[in-house]
Amino acid sequence: MNTPTKLTIVANLKMNTTVSEASLLLNRLHKELEGFNGANIVVCPPATHLFALHREVTEFKGTPHMVIGAQNMSEHEEGAYTGEISAEMIADFAKYVLVGHSERRKYFDEKDTVDAQKMSVALRHSLKPILCIGETEQQRNNGHTKQTILDQLNVGLSEITASDLKNITIAYEPVWAIGTGNFAKPAEVETAIELIKSTLQQIFQSDNSQTVPILYGGSVDVDNAKAYLDLPGINGLLVGGASLNYKKFAQIVKLA
Ligand code: PGA
Figure 1 (cartoon, rainbow, N blue to C red):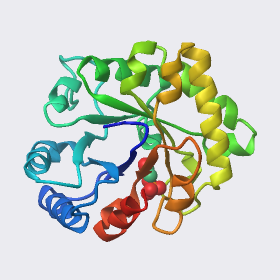
Figure 2 (cartoon, protein in one colour):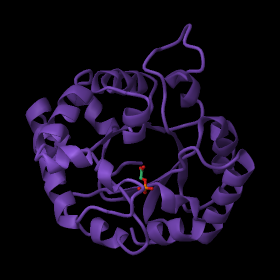
Figure 3 (tube, rainbow, N blue to C red):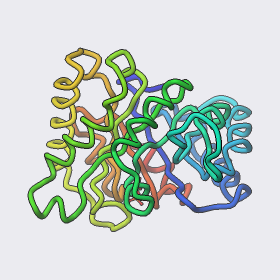
Figure 4 (cartoon, rainbow, N blue to C red):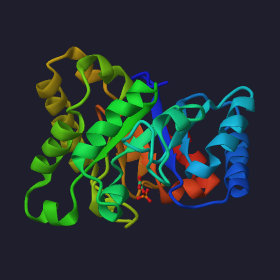
């Protein structure tokens, strides 16, 4: 997984589907994409589904290759944190974990410093964290897009080292584009990718920083996906709403 040449398409199911609905979705998707080997597929279901869906994907034969990711995890290793799920718990079932999704930041007041801890704990348990960053509409309107990206990277990656870079992914997800249908212009995404790459180089001073996969997310759909996938420096997509429709998601994957 995560080779720079093969694109990664991530499905974020958010708080949708029961286990049986998600299982059906996965099976249909697998059938629809039979024989397709052009992309790495990561499906991030709700935490209650991880065990069952991990079992299913390991039993899928042939291509496409699918793995499971988690949508969130605790920044703590273990202990008295009622309701929380640790990296060690999800690592039995998931290969990837989303960190700092804007909905976590918005509705659960998740801070960059907490995401920094999550990045380090995830890596300690051999998970591949996907750090989600991006500016809000207000930050954009105030001309603070660049500073927001710089801050989120500088703080969010403050607890990892250059040797960890081969196991992380960055998803650029402008908050104003998520779930709104108001997707970012490819040129805006290209600028963000360049900024992310130069910031990673500045922070880590390592060639590894240029091989960190960068994804775009925010109202990705069948009609706009190709324009992002054609951008220089992009390594895939993070798809929310459209991933709940297996036909749409399969079509997006096939564009990779
Ligand atoms: P969306 O969600 O595709 O529905 O905009 C993307 C995301 O939240 O990662």
